[in-house]
Amino acid sequence: MANSNSPFGFQQYYGGAGGAPTFAQTCYKVDDSAAAIYFGDLVMNDAATGKIIIATAGTQVITGVFAGCKYLSTSQKRTVWSNYWPGSDATGDVEAYVIDDPNARFKVMGGSTTFNITGTLTNTTTSPIGQYAQFAVGTPNSTTGISGAFLSSLGTTVTFPFIVVGLITTPPGASGTDPLSAYNQVVVGWNNQILRTNGAGPTGLA
Image (cartoon, rainbow, N blue to C red):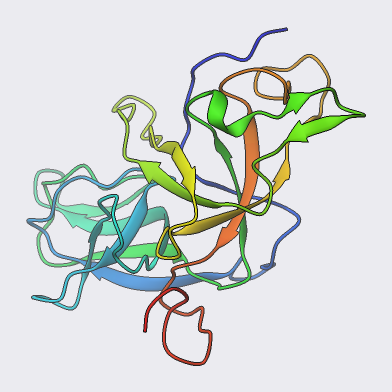
């Protein structure tokens, strides 16, 4: 079965860190005027406010993956728990839940043939595993609140936010599990992240 081009952002992967009761999540603040942030989006610190905003692809240090929020709804006049921040309707700051454990792992879709292997499963000639990876924000789903982020490119740039550490190959036949085709799913770990250090600040930074 061919993989479908159906990005879903970054989903916490069971092989990484995190468990009850926090699941590697930390509470952060989002300004009530900040742009929308969806479940599975990457976030970064806003130097002007000290709060988090949706991350843009580049060499910025990533704070973590957005996993929902709580805020006082202006229109409903009650506290709302949501898997995404819609970008408006809050009175005061939004309380956001962010997966920021430096050892966390995430499942994500590769956006092109760059992320699939070549050769065969038993005789691979090229593989994305071990390479740095950049992301794209993509188009989120405003109905479900799910991110549209995906991996956009591989390279040797040490300030890319992720390292590819594995391929998703199960369950057989499911979309995303064919590592020989485009839009396959991979497992990534942090590279350039706020809590991950190499002795001189976030990995990749001097």
